Length: 118
Image (tube, rainbow, N blue to C red):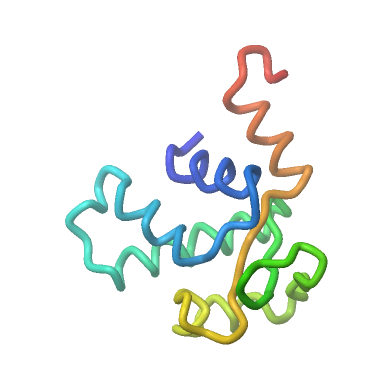
């Protein structure tokens, strides 16, 4: 499994994770440490779109502080527009964008990282 995908999936297992954290994850990834913030955000967007398409993560919107009960899932038809909106990648918006790893994503993570796929 690609190390970036592995780290993103794990971030989403632990808790809801803000999109801005995915940019930081890209910046720490070999091959991107010297990339601009814009390049890192574009890579983050590309990876998230692939993970969404495969059903490995879901996107959510919610204000701050994060309230799991108030978080609303982003409908599939709205995902691309949200990922292409600059404000979605910051902590400065009134409504923040988060992701979480789905059960399918957790299964995939386990299959790819644990001995014997357990």
